[in-house]
Amino acid sequence: TWGAAAMAMAFVQGETSFYVLRFILGAAEAGFFPGIIYYFTQWLPSSDRGKAMALFLSGSAIASVISGPVSGALLGVGGLNLHGWQWMFLIEGFASIVLCGVVWFWLQSHPHEATWL
Image 1 (spheres, rainbow, N blue to C red):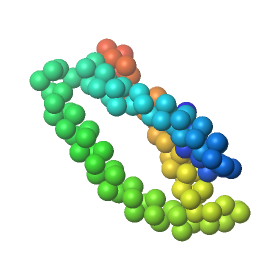
Image 2 (tube, one colour):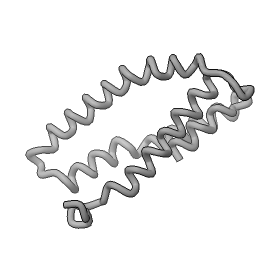
Image 3 (cartoon, one colour):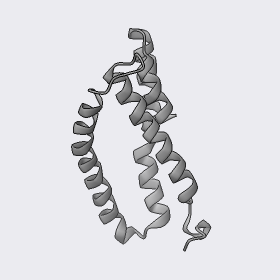
């Protein structure tokens, strides 16, 4: 839903659709951080969780540094009767959907379920 809601943002037609889609996007994103914390509790001993959280939060900060210029570059994309901001939502939403598919099939809920261990 996160990626689909982001992609749908490219087609907002007014204030109401903007607020509805932002609410859906926020609801989809809301469980991500708690989910990461829960995932770490399933995979890591408590002595390693602090380091894992630090790496996760550092990665989040680095992603913010990178995503600004990438989003800015996407604003210059045009074509197919879409504006740059619409392409930005479509491309970034699609990337989220692709990453979701990879994570869905690669990560298991518990270490004992991982066939690659």
